[in-house]
Image (cartoon, rainbow, N blue to C red):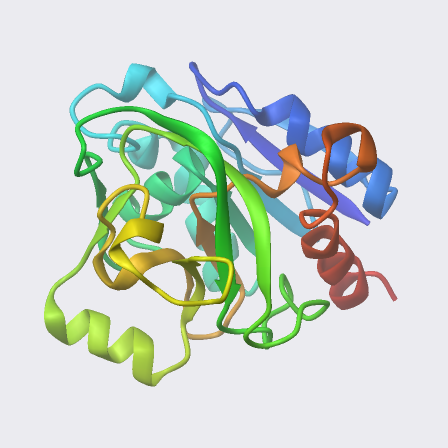
Length: 230
């Protein structure tokens, strides 16, 4: 399996994703600089967490207009799977590969802690090793995770089964108290129409092996291997 991790000025989770892909998927990982115009042939493209371009203008706004993102968008349209984590989710939205936008946390504070997530959609190449309705634990670390979209878009995401992860309590209830950032409908992750582009705020690469105090993230990478490695 070949994977490409896009590196922007300010990315800080690129190496974490690389290690997770190498350990879980035995992947050959290329680190692709933002100024490169072409992403090498890859089975998977990942946009990592961090603060691309210092989060100037809006989070992900400058990164979305780089040379490399034009090729990422073209490859995504051609069917190459793309995973965006945290800042990567923000970039995917700004680039128009996913609907909506990630705004400032409702608390106006940076939030860094573990959260509970309900797996709403296991029918994607990123989540096929989870059970529908299962509650998992993953870390978040962001100041702009407040997912916003208009009502029609939110209704369409729900009706089409494109809400992949939702913030909940341990029992799977999407309560206001379980929502760490004010995201509409407690949305933590969504996919595109073909379920081949996934954006999520929590970090699976930070909880994928026992030495990190949890393994719930491991199954996301397991899902990718099951889908892409033949």
